Amino acid sequence: MFEGFRLSTVDTVQASIRVRHGGSGPPLLLLHGSPQAHGMWHLIAPRLAEEVTVIATDLRRYGDSSKPESAPDHEHYSKRTMALDQIEVMRHFGFERFALCGHDRGGRVGYRMALDHPGVVTKLAVLDIVPTWEAFSRADLAFGLSYWHWFYLAQPFDLPKRLLTADPENTLFRGGSETISPEAMEQYVRCLRGLPRRRHRRHRPRRRRPRGRRIACPVLALWGRKGFHEEHYEVLEVWRGWAEEVRGRVLECGHYIPEEAPDETYAELREFFGE
Image (cartoon, rainbow, N blue to C red; front, side):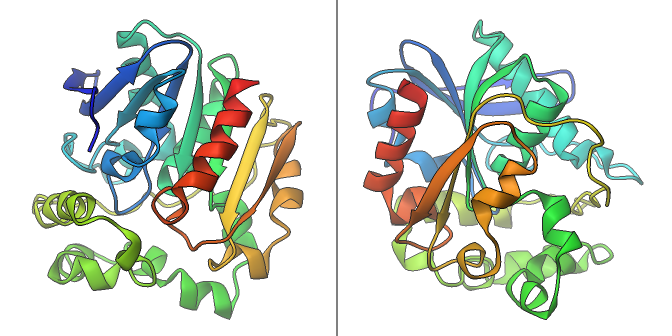
């Protein structure tokens, strides 16, 4: 699915990260969503690599990256810790500063990185998310019904694993699995069913907004009209509360934006990162 790309593993201080990399020019890091892996970029990455260096990784615990033992406070799976993995990966390839595009979970890692390391992220694209603090602080019945998996992933071990691996195609890919290629779905399901029998619960978010800190780099926000965000948030206004410079728009698709609307997504990313 990634013609011309190289596949490798980069060892960081705490994890081994699986990486696809190709192209040349300015660096762009692609971070996948949950419960996917780097394969979700296969319709976009080769086209982007015609103009930039594309590095697509599996976040720790996802895909073929390692799955370190968790801790009582789940800090090993916090977005802050995942962001440090990715900074180390980019340094491995010689990049101290880089652009970043993240979908879903990857977008949360991306904006955490931009807040914690403002000199590292030059531009940030976030796909189909609002900040976690905003989501929980505005949560209502509609949110609970649509984001039910956020709550079951926080249940005691090993209920989440048993539910997740029993039928992943129809559990976490509701309302979008038909748009995912068989090759990509095979990767997602294989890795989900191979989760180790140990605790890997979602890190509980700190329910407070970072005081005085805003994302300094330009932000592009894209979201799907058929997803949750279009009906429940003024997405750009939410992000303008977190970043100095924000633009974006809704796309005619659901949650899995790079796989459901690859041409539109590619065009938006190419324009944003090419400026």
